[in-house]
Each structure stands twice: as structure tokens, then as C-alpha cells.
Image 1 (spheres, rainbow, N blue to C red):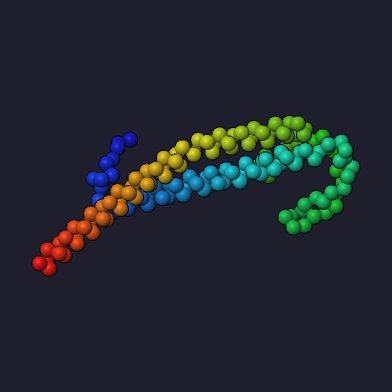
Image 2: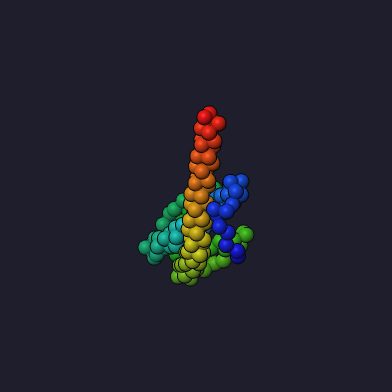
Length: 154
């Protein structure tokens, strides 16, 4: 990739570069936020497995049908769970295997976020450089305009 000296770019070119960097920063930030949401769901699911123990077997609980509608139920099997693996597929796993599954997913998502973070940081830095150069060019143009106005009045 060729290096470009930002000071050599015109104002419109700098504005285009800044706009592109804004979009890239927004995309990367959104990606990290989405990964974090999914990761939190896996953490929550893993934490919920702690409720599955022999002392809770047979206890009554509320089973969600929707996010706001529940039916009464009874916890009959504390050793196995059904895990949503995506696109409408569920897999039955033991509680221990489910913990391992969620841990792997959490670790994978953490690694993905760690891969994106340096790129996001680099784009932020580039955006700051472009903004500074843009500001300097605008100040130079204003100074030239002011000196030309003073010269024409004289």
C-alpha cells in the first residue's frame, strides 16, 4: 500500500479521506459492539448453567414462550440442555459439554474483538491526522484570504 503525504492533498481530497475513515471507524465500532452483544449472551447462558444442580431438580419455574409470556414448568433434567447452534438448529448437550461450548464461543469472540481493536485504533489515529491537516489547511486559507483582503483595502 502506497503512503500518501496528507499535506499534499487538497481540501476536497482530505474531506473524502476523512469521510471514508469516518465510515470505517463506524463499521469497526459497530462490529465490535455486535460481537460484544453476542459474547454477553454466551456469558449469560454459561452463567445460567450454574442453576442446573441436583438441588433444583423437580423445582417449579417459568418457561418463556416469548419475551413477555411465560408458562409454569418443572425442571425435570438438570444434566442435559438444548443449545441453539443457529439457523433454528438445537443440539442436546450435557451441562459440562454446554459449559465447554459456551467457553469456546466466548474465547472465539474475544479473539475476534482483539483482532479488530488494533485496526480501529489505527483508523482513529489516521482520522486525527487527517482532521489536523484539514484544520491547518483551512487556517492557511483563512490567513491568505485575510491578507488578500487587507491588501485590496490598502
